[in-house]
Length: 475
Image (cartoon, rainbow, N blue to C red; front, side):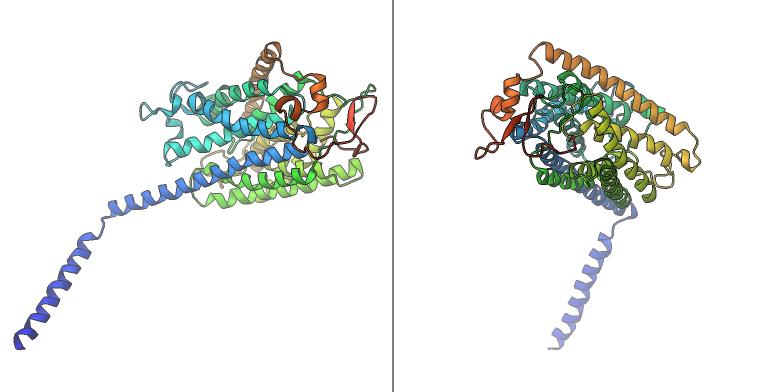
Protein backbone atom coordinates (compact mmCIF):
# COMPACT_ATOMS: atom_id res chain seq x y z
CA UNK A 1 0.00 0.00 0.00
CA UNK A 2 2.86 2.35 0.89
CA UNK A 3 4.52 1.62 -2.47
CA UNK A 4 1.23 2.30 -4.27
CA UNK A 5 0.90 5.67 -2.53
CA UNK A 6 4.38 6.57 -3.73
CA UNK A 7 3.83 5.36 -7.31
CA UNK A 8 0.50 7.12 -7.98
CA UNK A 9 1.66 10.70 -7.29
CA UNK A 10 4.80 10.08 -9.33
CA UNK A 11 2.78 8.73 -12.23
CA UNK A 12 0.42 11.70 -12.12
CA UNK A 13 3.31 14.13 -12.16
CA UNK A 14 4.83 12.29 -15.12
CA UNK A 15 1.58 12.25 -17.10
CA UNK A 16 0.64 15.85 -16.36
CA UNK A 17 4.15 17.00 -17.11
CA UNK A 18 4.05 15.20 -20.43
CA UNK A 19 0.72 16.74 -21.33
CA UNK A 20 1.92 20.17 -20.34
CA UNK A 21 5.06 19.77 -22.38
CA UNK A 22 3.08 18.66 -25.37
CA UNK A 23 0.75 21.65 -25.01
CA UNK A 24 3.56 24.15 -24.81
CA UNK A 25 5.48 22.41 -27.57
CA UNK A 26 2.38 22.76 -29.85
CA UNK A 27 2.04 26.50 -29.22
CA UNK A 28 2.49 28.05 -32.71
CA UNK A 29 4.94 30.79 -33.41
CA UNK A 30 3.73 34.18 -34.58
CA UNK A 31 4.67 33.28 -38.14
CA UNK A 32 2.77 29.99 -38.01
CA UNK A 33 -0.24 31.69 -36.46
CA UNK A 34 -0.27 34.35 -39.21
CA UNK A 35 -0.14 31.62 -41.85
CA UNK A 36 -3.11 29.83 -40.29
CA UNK A 37 -5.11 33.06 -40.15
CA UNK A 38 -4.28 33.76 -43.80
CA UNK A 39 -5.42 30.26 -44.76
CA UNK A 40 -8.71 30.74 -42.93
CA UNK A 41 -9.20 34.13 -44.61
CA UNK A 42 -8.59 32.58 -48.03
CA UNK A 43 -11.19 29.92 -47.28
CA UNK A 44 -13.70 32.59 -46.21
CA UNK A 45 -12.94 34.68 -49.29
CA UNK A 46 -13.38 31.67 -51.56
CA UNK A 47 -16.73 30.74 -50.03
CA UNK A 48 -17.86 34.37 -50.37
CA UNK A 49 -16.77 34.64 -54.01
CA UNK A 50 -18.45 31.37 -54.97
CA UNK A 51 -21.66 32.27 -53.13
CA UNK A 52 -21.87 35.60 -54.93
CA UNK A 53 -21.04 33.93 -58.25
CA UNK A 54 -24.01 31.62 -57.73
CA UNK A 55 -26.23 34.65 -57.00
CA UNK A 56 -25.11 36.34 -60.21
CA UNK A 57 -25.73 33.12 -62.13
CA UNK A 58 -29.29 33.14 -60.77
CA UNK A 59 -29.72 36.54 -62.42
CA UNK A 60 -30.07 34.63 -65.71
CA UNK A 61 -33.43 33.45 -64.38
CA UNK A 62 -34.29 37.04 -63.51
CA UNK A 63 -33.48 38.27 -67.00
CA UNK A 64 -35.46 35.40 -68.52
CA UNK A 65 -38.52 36.28 -66.44
CA UNK A 66 -38.28 40.04 -67.04
CA UNK A 67 -37.89 39.59 -70.79
CA UNK A 68 -40.50 36.85 -70.98
CA UNK A 69 -43.03 38.85 -68.98
CA UNK A 70 -42.53 42.05 -70.98
CA UNK A 71 -42.96 40.33 -74.36
CA UNK A 72 -45.88 38.48 -75.90
CA UNK A 73 -46.93 34.98 -74.93
CA UNK A 74 -46.16 33.58 -78.38
CA UNK A 75 -42.44 34.29 -77.91
CA UNK A 76 -41.91 33.05 -74.35
CA UNK A 77 -40.11 29.81 -75.19
CA UNK A 78 -37.77 31.70 -77.49
CA UNK A 79 -36.86 34.13 -74.70
CA UNK A 80 -36.16 31.26 -72.30
CA UNK A 81 -33.99 29.45 -74.84
CA UNK A 82 -31.93 32.54 -75.58
CA UNK A 83 -31.23 33.20 -71.91
CA UNK A 84 -30.32 29.55 -71.38
CA UNK A 85 -28.03 29.43 -74.39
CA UNK A 86 -26.34 32.69 -73.44
CA UNK A 87 -24.91 30.94 -70.41
CA UNK A 88 -24.22 27.60 -72.09
CA UNK A 89 -22.53 29.00 -75.19
CA UNK A 90 -20.90 31.78 -73.18
CA UNK A 91 -19.40 29.35 -70.66
CA UNK A 92 -17.46 27.52 -73.35
CA UNK A 93 -16.49 30.63 -75.33
CA UNK A 94 -15.26 32.43 -72.22
CA UNK A 95 -13.29 29.38 -71.05
CA UNK A 96 -11.64 28.82 -74.43
CA UNK A 97 -10.63 32.38 -75.25
CA UNK A 98 -12.56 35.12 -73.41
CA UNK A 99 -10.97 34.83 -69.97
CA UNK A 100 -7.48 34.87 -71.49
CA UNK A 101 -8.24 37.94 -73.62
CA UNK A 102 -9.64 39.70 -70.57
CA UNK A 103 -7.18 38.85 -67.80
CA UNK A 104 -4.25 37.10 -69.45
CA UNK A 105 -0.86 38.78 -69.72
CA UNK A 106 -0.66 40.87 -72.88
CA UNK A 107 -0.60 44.54 -73.76
CA UNK A 108 -2.71 47.59 -72.98
CA UNK A 109 -5.43 46.53 -75.42
CA UNK A 110 -5.84 42.76 -75.05
CA UNK A 111 -4.58 39.73 -73.14
CA UNK A 112 -2.60 37.18 -75.13
CA UNK A 113 -2.26 34.22 -72.76
CA UNK A 114 -4.25 32.06 -70.36
CA UNK A 115 -6.52 30.50 -72.97
CA UNK A 116 -8.37 27.35 -71.86
CA UNK A 117 -7.61 28.61 -68.33
CA UNK A 118 -4.00 27.37 -68.62
CA UNK A 119 -1.68 29.24 -66.26
CA UNK A 120 1.71 28.80 -67.94
CA UNK A 121 3.64 31.14 -65.63
CA UNK A 122 3.02 32.89 -62.32
CA UNK A 123 2.41 36.10 -64.26
CA UNK A 124 -0.21 34.73 -66.68
CA UNK A 125 -3.08 36.19 -64.65
CA UNK A 126 -1.16 38.89 -62.80
CA UNK A 127 -4.02 41.33 -63.33
CA UNK A 128 -6.06 39.28 -60.85
CA UNK A 129 -3.28 38.83 -58.31
CA UNK A 130 -4.96 41.29 -55.95
CA UNK A 131 -7.56 38.61 -55.20
CA UNK A 132 -6.27 35.75 -53.05
CA UNK A 133 -8.92 33.19 -54.01
CA UNK A 134 -8.04 30.23 -56.28
CA UNK A 135 -7.95 30.73 -60.05
CA UNK A 136 -11.08 28.65 -60.60
CA UNK A 137 -13.02 30.88 -58.20
CA UNK A 138 -11.85 33.94 -60.11
CA UNK A 139 -12.90 32.33 -63.39
CA UNK A 140 -16.38 31.36 -62.19
CA UNK A 141 -17.06 34.82 -60.81
CA UNK A 142 -15.96 36.53 -64.02
CA UNK A 143 -17.85 34.01 -66.17
CA UNK A 144 -21.23 34.90 -64.70
CA UNK A 145 -20.51 38.57 -65.42
CA UNK A 146 -19.76 37.73 -69.05
CA UNK A 147 -23.08 35.88 -69.29
CA UNK A 148 -24.90 38.92 -67.90
CA UNK A 149 -23.44 41.19 -70.59
CA UNK A 150 -24.48 38.72 -73.29
CA UNK A 151 -28.05 38.26 -72.12
CA UNK A 152 -28.89 41.99 -72.06
CA UNK A 153 -29.20 41.90 -75.86
CA UNK A 154 -31.90 39.24 -75.80
CA UNK A 155 -34.68 41.58 -74.68
CA UNK A 156 -33.90 44.41 -77.09
CA UNK A 157 -33.90 42.03 -80.06
CA UNK A 158 -36.88 40.01 -78.85
CA UNK A 159 -39.77 38.72 -80.97
CA UNK A 160 -38.09 38.99 -84.39
CA UNK A 161 -34.54 37.55 -84.28
CA UNK A 162 -33.43 34.28 -85.85
CA UNK A 163 -32.32 31.83 -83.18
CA UNK A 164 -29.24 30.59 -85.08
CA UNK A 165 -28.03 34.17 -85.60
CA UNK A 166 -28.50 34.87 -81.91
CA UNK A 167 -26.35 31.86 -80.96
CA UNK A 168 -23.51 33.17 -83.11
CA UNK A 169 -23.82 36.61 -81.53
CA UNK A 170 -23.74 35.07 -78.04
CA UNK A 171 -20.50 33.23 -78.78
CA UNK A 172 -18.80 36.32 -80.26
CA UNK A 173 -19.65 38.72 -77.43
CA UNK A 174 -18.51 36.21 -74.79
CA UNK A 175 -15.31 35.25 -76.61
CA UNK A 176 -14.18 38.62 -77.92
CA UNK A 177 -16.19 41.83 -77.51
CA UNK A 178 -16.88 41.76 -73.76
CA UNK A 179 -13.40 40.41 -72.85
CA UNK A 180 -11.61 43.18 -74.77
CA UNK A 181 -13.63 45.87 -72.95
CA UNK A 182 -12.99 44.04 -69.69
CA UNK A 183 -9.25 43.95 -70.35
CA UNK A 184 -9.15 47.71 -70.90
CA UNK A 185 -10.75 48.34 -67.50
CA UNK A 186 -10.27 45.30 -65.23
CA UNK A 187 -7.38 43.49 -66.90
CA UNK A 188 -4.75 46.19 -66.51
CA UNK A 189 -5.45 47.81 -69.87
CA UNK A 190 -5.19 51.36 -71.08
CA UNK A 191 -8.35 52.71 -69.45
CA UNK A 192 -7.30 51.36 -66.06
CA UNK A 193 -3.88 52.99 -66.54
CA UNK A 194 -5.59 56.24 -67.50
CA UNK A 195 -7.49 56.33 -64.20
CA UNK A 196 -10.94 55.07 -65.23
CA UNK A 197 -12.91 53.27 -62.51
CA UNK A 198 -15.84 50.89 -62.71
CA UNK A 199 -16.19 48.86 -59.53
CA UNK A 200 -18.71 46.22 -60.60
CA UNK A 201 -19.54 46.88 -64.24
CA UNK A 202 -21.92 49.73 -65.12
CA UNK A 203 -19.83 50.17 -68.26
CA UNK A 204 -17.88 46.90 -68.52
CA UNK A 205 -20.96 44.69 -68.26
CA UNK A 206 -24.13 46.72 -68.69
CA UNK A 207 -23.15 49.32 -71.27
CA UNK A 208 -21.28 46.73 -73.33
CA UNK A 209 -24.39 44.58 -73.55
CA UNK A 210 -26.64 47.59 -74.10
CA UNK A 211 -24.66 49.08 -76.98
CA UNK A 212 -24.70 45.70 -78.70
CA UNK A 213 -28.47 45.66 -78.08
CA UNK A 214 -28.79 49.13 -79.60
CA UNK A 215 -27.00 48.12 -82.80
CA UNK A 216 -28.89 44.81 -82.98
CA UNK A 217 -32.29 46.49 -82.61
CA UNK A 218 -31.32 49.07 -85.23
CA UNK A 219 -30.28 46.39 -87.73
CA UNK A 220 -33.47 44.40 -87.11
CA UNK A 221 -35.91 47.25 -87.36
CA UNK A 222 -39.15 47.48 -85.35
CA UNK A 223 -41.62 44.65 -84.83
CA UNK A 224 -44.58 44.39 -87.18
CA UNK A 225 -47.28 46.73 -85.92
CA UNK A 226 -45.08 48.72 -83.54
CA UNK A 227 -45.34 52.04 -85.40
CA UNK A 228 -48.30 53.48 -87.32
CA UNK A 229 -48.10 55.28 -90.63
CA UNK A 230 -48.26 58.62 -88.83
CA UNK A 231 -45.12 57.67 -86.91
CA UNK A 232 -46.75 57.20 -83.52
CA UNK A 233 -46.03 54.05 -81.52
CA UNK A 234 -48.56 51.32 -80.90
CA UNK A 235 -48.33 49.76 -77.46
CA UNK A 236 -47.41 46.08 -77.57
CA UNK A 237 -47.61 45.21 -73.86
CA UNK A 238 -46.01 42.20 -72.27
CA UNK A 239 -48.18 39.18 -71.61
CA UNK A 240 -47.37 38.71 -67.90
CA UNK A 241 -46.34 41.62 -65.69
CA UNK A 242 -46.35 39.52 -62.48
CA UNK A 243 -43.77 37.30 -64.19
CA UNK A 244 -41.69 40.39 -65.01
CA UNK A 245 -42.03 41.60 -61.41
CA UNK A 246 -40.72 38.28 -60.09
CA UNK A 247 -37.82 38.60 -62.51
CA UNK A 248 -36.97 42.03 -61.10
CA UNK A 249 -36.99 40.67 -57.53
CA UNK A 250 -34.64 37.88 -58.64
CA UNK A 251 -32.34 40.42 -60.27
CA UNK A 252 -32.41 42.64 -57.18
CA UNK A 253 -31.33 39.67 -55.06
CA UNK A 254 -28.66 38.75 -57.59
CA UNK A 255 -27.26 42.27 -57.46
CA UNK A 256 -26.23 41.61 -53.86
CA UNK A 257 -23.82 39.14 -55.40
CA UNK A 258 -22.98 41.36 -58.36
CA UNK A 259 -21.83 44.44 -56.45
CA UNK A 260 -20.62 43.27 -53.02
CA UNK A 261 -19.12 40.15 -54.61
CA UNK A 262 -16.83 42.31 -56.72
CA UNK A 263 -14.65 42.78 -53.65
CA UNK A 264 -13.67 39.12 -54.20
CA UNK A 265 -13.01 39.08 -50.47
CA UNK A 266 -15.15 38.70 -47.36
CA UNK A 267 -14.28 42.05 -45.81
CA UNK A 268 -16.15 44.84 -44.07
CA UNK A 269 -16.76 46.88 -47.23
CA UNK A 270 -19.45 44.47 -48.46
CA UNK A 271 -21.90 45.97 -45.94
CA UNK A 272 -21.35 49.48 -47.29
CA UNK A 273 -21.66 48.30 -50.91
CA UNK A 274 -24.87 46.40 -50.15
CA UNK A 275 -26.38 49.51 -48.58
CA UNK A 276 -25.61 51.83 -51.50
CA UNK A 277 -26.85 49.18 -53.93
CA UNK A 278 -30.16 48.71 -52.16
CA UNK A 279 -30.88 52.40 -51.66
CA UNK A 280 -30.28 53.20 -55.33
CA UNK A 281 -32.68 50.45 -56.40
CA UNK A 282 -35.39 51.56 -53.99
CA UNK A 283 -35.31 55.24 -54.92
CA UNK A 284 -35.03 54.34 -58.62
CA UNK A 285 -38.36 52.54 -58.43
CA UNK A 286 -40.00 55.49 -56.67
CA UNK A 287 -38.78 58.19 -59.06
CA UNK A 288 -39.59 56.08 -62.12
CA UNK A 289 -43.10 55.50 -60.79
CA UNK A 290 -43.65 59.20 -60.12
CA UNK A 291 -42.25 60.21 -63.51
CA UNK A 292 -44.48 57.71 -65.32
CA UNK A 293 -47.45 58.86 -63.21
CA UNK A 294 -46.91 62.42 -64.36
CA UNK A 295 -46.40 61.50 -68.02
CA UNK A 296 -48.99 58.74 -68.40
CA UNK A 297 -51.46 59.68 -65.62
CA UNK A 298 -51.01 56.23 -64.03
CA UNK A 299 -48.31 54.67 -61.79
CA UNK A 300 -47.17 52.33 -64.54
CA UNK A 301 -45.98 48.87 -63.47
CA UNK A 302 -43.43 48.16 -66.18
CA UNK A 303 -41.81 51.59 -65.85
CA UNK A 304 -41.54 51.14 -62.09
CA UNK A 305 -39.92 47.73 -62.54
CA UNK A 306 -37.42 49.24 -64.94
CA UNK A 307 -36.81 51.97 -62.37
CA UNK A 308 -35.50 49.35 -59.94
CA UNK A 309 -33.11 48.05 -62.59
CA UNK A 310 -32.09 51.57 -63.59
CA UNK A 311 -31.05 52.36 -60.03
CA UNK A 312 -29.16 49.09 -59.74
CA UNK A 313 -27.32 49.56 -63.04
CA UNK A 314 -26.39 53.17 -62.26
CA UNK A 315 -24.96 52.39 -58.81
CA UNK A 316 -22.95 49.40 -60.02
CA UNK A 317 -19.88 51.45 -61.03
CA UNK A 318 -19.69 53.78 -57.99
CA UNK A 319 -21.21 51.53 -55.30
CA UNK A 320 -17.95 51.12 -53.32
CA UNK A 321 -16.85 54.73 -53.64
CA UNK A 322 -19.92 56.81 -52.73
CA UNK A 323 -21.96 57.50 -49.60
CA UNK A 324 -25.50 56.22 -49.02
CA UNK A 325 -26.80 59.76 -49.53
CA UNK A 326 -25.02 59.99 -52.89
CA UNK A 327 -26.41 56.61 -53.91
CA UNK A 328 -29.92 57.96 -53.40
CA UNK A 329 -29.20 60.90 -55.69
CA UNK A 330 -27.69 58.58 -58.34
CA UNK A 331 -30.47 56.00 -58.17
CA UNK A 332 -33.20 58.63 -58.08
CA UNK A 333 -31.89 60.39 -61.15
CA UNK A 334 -31.56 57.05 -62.96
CA UNK A 335 -35.22 56.27 -62.26
CA UNK A 336 -36.27 59.49 -63.98
CA UNK A 337 -33.77 59.03 -66.78
CA UNK A 338 -34.95 55.54 -67.72
CA UNK A 339 -38.53 56.66 -68.31
CA UNK A 340 -37.43 59.59 -70.45
CA UNK A 341 -35.06 57.34 -72.39
CA UNK A 342 -37.80 54.82 -73.18
CA UNK A 343 -39.99 57.64 -74.51
CA UNK A 344 -37.07 59.01 -76.55
CA UNK A 345 -36.25 55.70 -78.23
CA UNK A 346 -39.90 55.30 -79.15
CA UNK A 347 -39.82 58.72 -80.80
CA UNK A 348 -36.83 57.79 -82.97
CA UNK A 349 -38.47 54.44 -83.83
CA UNK A 350 -35.94 52.19 -82.10
CA UNK A 351 -38.03 49.21 -81.00
CA UNK A 352 -36.68 47.85 -77.70
CA UNK A 353 -39.44 45.64 -76.23
CA UNK A 354 -38.05 45.57 -72.68
CA UNK A 355 -36.22 48.89 -72.45
CA UNK A 356 -32.80 47.22 -72.28
CA UNK A 357 -30.90 50.06 -73.96
CA UNK A 358 -32.51 52.61 -71.66
CA UNK A 359 -31.82 50.62 -68.49
CA UNK A 360 -28.37 49.23 -69.19
CA UNK A 361 -26.91 51.66 -71.71
CA UNK A 362 -28.20 55.09 -70.70
CA UNK A 363 -28.26 54.43 -66.96
CA UNK A 364 -25.02 52.45 -67.06
CA UNK A 365 -23.21 55.38 -68.69
CA UNK A 366 -24.89 57.82 -66.30
CA UNK A 367 -23.80 55.83 -63.25
CA UNK A 368 -20.24 55.60 -64.55
CA UNK A 369 -20.09 59.38 -64.95
CA UNK A 370 -21.59 59.84 -61.48
CA UNK A 371 -18.53 58.11 -60.04
CA UNK A 372 -16.53 61.12 -61.24
CA UNK A 373 -18.94 63.42 -59.42
CA UNK A 374 -19.71 61.67 -56.13
CA UNK A 375 -16.66 59.51 -55.29
CA UNK A 376 -15.11 59.97 -51.84
CA UNK A 377 -11.66 58.61 -51.17
CA UNK A 378 -12.47 57.76 -47.57
CA UNK A 379 -14.54 54.74 -48.61
CA UNK A 380 -11.73 53.04 -50.56
CA UNK A 381 -8.57 54.99 -49.66
CA UNK A 382 -5.96 55.21 -52.37
CA UNK A 383 -8.28 54.36 -55.26
CA UNK A 384 -10.46 56.91 -57.04
CA UNK A 385 -9.75 59.95 -54.93
CA UNK A 386 -12.54 62.48 -54.52
CA UNK A 387 -14.97 63.33 -57.27
CA UNK A 388 -15.88 66.78 -58.55
CA UNK A 389 -18.59 67.40 -55.93
CA UNK A 390 -16.20 66.57 -53.09
CA UNK A 391 -13.29 68.78 -54.01
CA UNK A 392 -11.41 66.37 -56.26
CA UNK A 393 -11.49 68.45 -59.41
CA UNK A 394 -12.61 67.38 -62.87
CA UNK A 395 -9.89 64.89 -63.82
CA UNK A 396 -11.74 61.82 -62.53
CA UNK A 397 -14.91 62.87 -64.34
CA UNK A 398 -12.92 63.43 -67.53
CA UNK A 399 -11.40 59.95 -67.30
CA UNK A 400 -14.85 58.46 -66.73
CA UNK A 401 -16.19 60.27 -69.81
CA UNK A 402 -13.30 59.02 -71.95
CA UNK A 403 -14.06 55.47 -70.84
CA UNK A 404 -17.77 55.73 -71.57
CA UNK A 405 -17.19 57.16 -75.04
CA UNK A 406 -14.40 54.71 -75.89
CA UNK A 407 -16.44 51.66 -74.91
CA UNK A 408 -19.44 52.92 -76.88
CA UNK A 409 -17.30 53.47 -79.97
CA UNK A 410 -15.61 50.08 -79.81
CA UNK A 411 -18.78 48.12 -79.12
CA UNK A 412 -20.77 50.01 -81.76
CA UNK A 413 -18.18 49.25 -84.43
CA UNK A 414 -18.06 45.58 -83.40
CA UNK A 415 -21.86 45.46 -83.41
CA UNK A 416 -22.12 46.93 -86.90
CA UNK A 417 -19.59 44.40 -88.22
CA UNK A 418 -21.12 41.41 -86.44
CA UNK A 419 -24.79 42.09 -87.14
CA UNK A 420 -23.98 43.22 -90.67
CA UNK A 421 -22.24 39.94 -91.37
CA UNK A 422 -25.05 37.94 -89.77
CA UNK A 423 -27.68 39.74 -91.83
CA UNK A 424 -25.70 39.13 -95.02
CA UNK A 425 -25.07 35.43 -94.32
CA UNK A 426 -27.39 33.40 -92.09
CA UNK A 427 -29.93 36.21 -91.88
CA UNK A 428 -30.91 38.19 -88.79
CA UNK A 429 -34.69 38.50 -88.85
CA UNK A 430 -37.38 35.84 -89.11
CA UNK A 431 -40.02 36.00 -91.85
CA UNK A 432 -43.15 38.10 -91.39
CA UNK A 433 -45.28 34.96 -91.13
CA UNK A 434 -43.04 33.52 -88.39
CA UNK A 435 -43.12 36.80 -86.49
CA UNK A 436 -46.90 37.01 -86.64
CA UNK A 437 -47.33 33.38 -85.61
CA UNK A 438 -44.71 33.72 -82.89
CA UNK A 439 -41.15 32.50 -82.54
CA UNK A 440 -42.17 29.72 -80.17
CA UNK A 441 -43.76 27.88 -83.08
CA UNK A 442 -41.62 29.18 -85.93
CA UNK A 443 -38.22 28.66 -84.25
CA UNK A 444 -38.87 25.89 -81.71
CA UNK A 445 -42.00 24.11 -82.84
CA UNK A 446 -43.85 24.38 -79.53
CA UNK A 447 -45.93 26.89 -77.61
CA UNK A 448 -45.28 28.01 -74.05
CA UNK A 449 -49.03 28.18 -73.45
CA UNK A 450 -50.64 25.49 -75.63
CA UNK A 451 -53.98 25.63 -73.80
CA UNK A 452 -54.96 29.11 -74.92
CA UNK A 453 -54.57 31.52 -77.79
CA UNK A 454 -54.33 35.27 -77.50
CA UNK A 455 -57.12 37.08 -79.33
CA UNK A 456 -55.71 39.42 -81.94
CA UNK A 457 -57.17 41.98 -84.24
CA UNK A 458 -55.90 43.80 -87.29
CA UNK A 459 -55.41 47.44 -86.34
CA UNK A 460 -54.36 48.53 -89.82
CA UNK A 461 -50.74 48.75 -88.65
CA UNK A 462 -50.19 45.13 -87.88
CA UNK A 463 -51.35 42.53 -85.41
CA UNK A 464 -51.60 43.72 -81.83
CA UNK A 465 -53.18 41.87 -78.87
CA UNK A 466 -56.77 43.04 -78.50
CA UNK A 467 -56.50 43.08 -74.72
CA UNK A 468 -54.33 45.97 -73.46
CA UNK A 469 -54.70 47.78 -76.80
CA UNK A 470 -55.25 51.09 -75.00
CA UNK A 471 -52.15 50.83 -72.84
CA UNK A 472 -49.97 53.92 -72.91
CA UNK A 473 -46.67 52.24 -72.09
CA UNK A 474 -44.14 50.88 -74.52
CA UNK A 475 -42.25 48.23 -72.60
